[in-house]
Each structure stands twice: as structure tokens, then as C-alpha cells.
Amino acid sequence: MRIKEHPILGTIKKGKKVKYYYNGTEMEGYKGESIAAALHAEGVMVHRYTSKLHKPRGVFCAIGRCTDCVMIVDGKPNIRTCMTLLKEGMYIETQYGISGKEVWQ
Amino acid sequence: MIRYDVIVIGAGPAGLSASIEAAEAGMKVAVFDENTRPGGQLFKQIHKFFGAKEHKAKIRGFRIGEELLAEAEKLQVDVHLNAAVIGIHDFNSIAVVENEQVSFYKAGNLIIATGASENMVPFDGWTLPGVIGAGAAQTMMNLHGVLPGKKVLMVGSGNVGLVVGYQLLQAGVEIAAIIDAAPKIGGYGVHASKVARTGVPFLLSHTILKAEGEEFVTGAAVVEVDSKFQPIKGTEKHFDVDTICMAVGLSPMSQLLRIAGCEMKEMGGLVPACNEYGETSISGIFAAGDVAGIEEASSAMVGGRIAGAASALRDGFIMQGDFEEKYKALKESLNQLRQGMFCKENRGKTDMTATEEGIPLSNSLLEKGYLLEKEIIKFPGVKKKAGVHPIIECTQNIPCNPCQTACKFNCISIGENITALPVVIEDSKCTNCGMCVASCSGQAIFLLNEDSEDGFVSITLPYEFLPYPKKGVKGIALDRSGNRVCEAEIIGLRTAEAFDHTALLTMKVPSEFAMSARFFTL
Ligand SMILES: Cc1cc2nc3c(=O)[nH]c(=O)nc-3n(C[C@H](O)[C@H](O)[C@H](O)COP(=O)(O)OP(=O)(O)OC[C@H]3O[C@@H](n4cnc5c(N)ncnc54)[C@H](O)[C@@H]3O)c2cc1C
Ligand code: SF4
Ligand code: SF4
Ligand code: FES
Image (cartoon, rainbow over all chains, first blue to last red; front, side):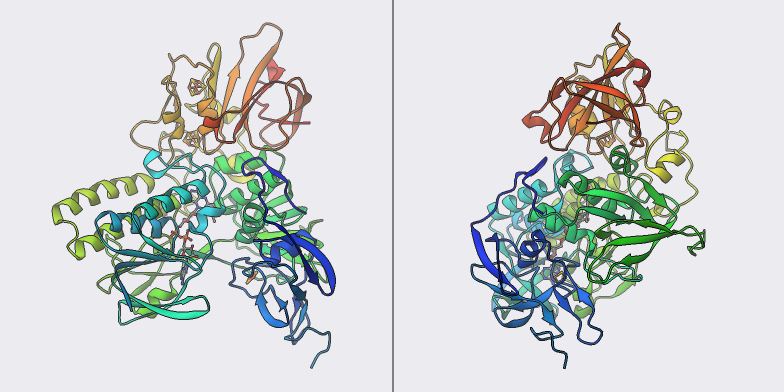
């Protein structure tokens, strides 16, 4: 869900379209926006599951403070997706505890 | 290690103003901010600000940020972005993380302007995806152009909740309700009214019980609370929402001051104990803006200027006499802002019953977000006059006066004291230029023309939603509470650069609705 025309901000300017992968599925977003914004626009709510209780977490603060939004980005876990900008070809995965697989140690 | 005369931490309104003042005095200044964009809170604020002209009133927040940055850059302030300050050592050097590396800088003076962070109240399901902070909602929609959700429950009726609520509506999001555990709306009445007239209900004395859903928010349960904030059984209500937005207050982000060893005190969170120039218990370390006590951008800018000037005095860049003159003017400006019913001294007061002018306050405004028709006519901004004339529905003593400055035809007066209520001047002649309507930060001014023979009146209102209704379109007029009152026809739509994205919509309604129709919908 993206805003196209805004009464105050006018036409929302966006960077170049980029392709990325979310849990293996190809998706589209824009260069210069955060990973979290791109995912939210596609309706992705859950970014990770906590390690002990397996509870879902998603964007909460959007300014890098709460760490609820961390995911596995290009193989690296614990990346704050609200602070990391989207890039062409990025591989983004839901984080389970600290792993990318739904296996619980 | 690079050395500066002044290092400012935080590039919000306080930090940028401090750096401008210090650089103007000839000091070598650097500003560090952990964000990718300068402006602090400002770059997310798309509404017109309150205050007087010297506080950049009626300018939209993000533009104020741009103006300050341009000024700082012109003065060759070194602005370091993506640069989080993680420590202060030996009273005058800082450790900064830049490009994933830690670097160190030194300065004779440190001005800490790190602002505030959002509070959270835990409740059942509060960690569920879809429960977001008000700041996150703003970042999503105003920076990235992404809708935070389709339907939102707003928790908190302070200015942040009201402003973000309105911005959500502007972005095209529906708001199920704005709730607050307090019995009265915490923010400005004018902010509440512009939300209420679109039909958003306010539920005061209500708290959130639960965020419903397994994987993400699918609904919210709220409950009424008694005077001791205890839930009242049987008053539970459910809302079908996909987002719960939390706007439950801010706390000063004062960790760095604590690390530095400054003496702290408790004032809505830990704040540094400062003298009148913002200097902490450690000589050469200053604090300005929200970190020194939550206030507004307008006062943060003045506080920043004072700290900047004081550091210039401390290092001999300006003379004592010049400083005193400057300080006097800045202090005066600060005093103006620190008056009225929302100032620190009056915050949380529950026994206020009348304005400074002695007009009874509207309980409906405080509890439901809108004034009643019988109340509004008691205010000095509402007068019956021939021809087109302004109706000013601004009924609380807030530090604001763009309406007075906007009218070049002397129809509106507030006077020297900027918290006084706006008065429509009896023997003035309104030219229907519309400047007051577009300049009013609270969207509280309407133009009324009752001089028509056919039993209709025209009402001009500020409109900041898309799409704009076209001339000739017929729709429904809403009253202050958002209730549908009558049919309305759009007979004019004015936009202008001087109106800065506030369109002026003129609708024709039957004369009996002259004092009740205040919004338009299709
Ligand atoms: C929704 C909303 C609406 C508002 N509306 C109005 C209004 O209409 N009128 C008005 O006057 N005010 C308004 N305000 C209040 C105003 O925005 C704040 O009072 C003001 O921004 C405070 O300024 P500041 O410079 O103290 O802090 P901030 O603007 O918060 O800036 C602090 C900066 O410091 C940076 N920082 C923090 N820690 C570090 C660190 N360790 N290292 C590096 N950088 C750091 C942050 O990234 C931030 O950029 C509003 C606020 C909100 C949230
Ligand atoms: S419409 Fe113009 S002339 Fe009339 S009160 Fe407003 S600013 Fe003054
Ligand atoms: S009527 Fe005047 S004082 Fe009141 S909110 Fe509008 S501009 Fe400010
Ligand atoms: S949402 Fe809080 S760190 Fe990203």
C-alpha cells in the first residue's frame, strides 16, 4: 500500500525500481527506501520470531531503537531493516531466533 | 583528533539553532546526528507550526528543518550525518560511530541536543506486528510514502496523537477512534477539532486492553477506566483495525549527559540540571531542546540559540554586553512561548475552567474534540457581520498568532501577548482574500457570508485532503463532530502558492447551517 498523491507532499518521489527476494520470492521496491518500508508496502508484517517463545515481531519504532524489525539480509542475521536501505538483488529472510530456518535449537 | 570550538550532538531544531548561533559568532562548529536526514523530529512533520513569526510559525515542520540546515551550511557548520555519538570522555571529547568505525573528536564546548524518544505502555499483545509507535507511522507515510495500515486505532490524545492522527487521514488511512486514559484531551483543541470534524470519535477515560491477532494485529479491545484508571467491567469495546498506533508521550534522551557525569534531576524523565543558559553542572557542557525537558520545536530553537551564544561567550567569541542583549531578546521570545494553558506550569492542571479572558472552557472540546454551537458564539473570534467575514474557532490560550500576521486588512487581532485569543475586529472590512484561513496552523478559521437572499450561505473552509472536490459538485456538509447535517454544493476551490498546500473550499448550504456546517464530504 503506497501513497501516490499526497495533499502536502505532492507526488511521492521514488528512486529507481529494484528487485529483491523475500524468503525466495521475487519482489519489487524502490532504491533509497528502507527494507522495512518496501516490505510493509507489500503487506509483510512479520519480520522475525523470538527465540524462546517464538512470538512474531515487526516494525515498531522505525528508527533503529527497538530491534523488533531485524531479519536476515544477504545471509547476515540481526540486520535492522528499518535502518538498512534496499538494494538490487538483496536476499531478505524471516529470522527465527537467530537463524533463517524454521528450526528451533 | 579533529578539534572544534563547539560540537553539537543532534541535528534537530535545537542542535541546528545552537550551531547557527555559535557559527555566527565565528566559532568552528560540527553537528553530529545518527539519522540520515537532518532536522530531528522536524523532517517528519508536515503540518504548519504554531508560535509567532520569529518562531517560524505557519511554516510546515519539514520546511523549518530545511531552512535551518541551509542556514547552518551557509555558515560552514560541519554536518555529520549517519554519525551516532556513543560516548563522552574527559568532558570534551566524543566517540562517534561513522561508517561502522569509531572516531573521536574534541571541542571546547559540547552542546547536547539529542531530543526525546517515544514512551511505550505494555498491554496484552503489545509486541504483535501492527502495534507501532507514532513516529514509525510518520516515517512510513511521510518519508517513504507507505501506508502504515488501512485502519488505525490511535492511543493517546496529546498533540502527537492528534497530529499523527490527522496525517494518517491525509495519507488516506481510516481512524477507528482516538483513545486516552485521561479524562480530557491532552493536545490543543484546534488539533482535536480538525480530526473530530472528519468524523473520528474520541474515547476519553479509555485504555487499550488487548491487541488481537496471532501473527499480526487484526483488532483491538479497549475498556473504559474509572477515575483511578481502573478498568470498568462490562465497558469493553472492540475495533476492527489492522494497526494500533501508540502516542503515549516522550522521554528526554539524556543518556549521554548521564554518561558525561552531569548532575541530573527528575522532570518527566531524567533531565540535566541546567542554569538559565542551558549549561549543565559541568562547565562547557550544555543541553538544549527536548533533552533538557520535553517542549516544542519553537522553544527548542530558542533554547539552542541561547546555548550556542553562551558557548560563544564562554570562549570569548562574543562580548558580555552583546551576549546579554541577545539573551534578553531570546529569553523574551521563550517567555512568550511558555505561556497559556498548555505551558509547563499549567500542564496536567484539571481545575482550569476559563480562558485568560474569562470565557468558560468548553468541556465538549476537552472530552469530544469539538465545540458546541452555543459555546462558540461566546468567543471574540466569532462575530455576526455583513458580507464575507472570518469565524475564528480558536478557543484556548495557545502560543500562536499567524492569523493576526496573515490579515493585511486588520480584521484579526491577538495583540502583544501571543497566547491571547484571536479577536475579530468589529469595524473591519474583510476582502475574502483567504490568507487567514490558509495561515491558521490549527485550521480553525472559516469565512462566512450570510448575505444572500435565496436562503443559502457560503462557508469557506481549509481543506488538506485529496482529491479536491470540484466546483459544482454536490455532497454533504458535516458539523464539528463529523455528523452529516445537510446537502452542500461546492461553489469555489482556491489554491495558491501563498496558501502552501491548504486549499480553500467554499460550499453553499442552507442558512440555518451557517454556524454548524464545518466540513465537506462526498
Ligand atoms: C508528531 C509531532 C508533532 C509535533 N508538532 C509540533 C508543532 O506543531 N510545533 C512545535 O513547535 N513542535 C512540535 N513537535 C515537537 C518538536 O518536534 C520537538 O519538540 C522538537 O523537534 C525537539 O527538538 P530537539 O532538537 O530537541 O530534538 P529532536 O528534533 O528530537 O532532534 C534530536 C536529534 O538528535 C539525534 N540524536 C539523538 N541521539 C543521538 C546520538 N547519540 N548521536 C547522534 N545523534 C543523536 C536524533 O537523531 C535527532 O535527529 C512535534 C513533535 C511530534 C513528535
Ligand atoms: S479573508 Fe483576508 S481580509 Fe478577510 S479576515 Fe482573512 S486575511 Fe483578513
Ligand atoms: S486562529 Fe490564530 S491563534 Fe488560533 S490556531 Fe489559528 S493561527 Fe493560531
Ligand atoms: S523498527 Fe525498531 S529497530 Fe527497526
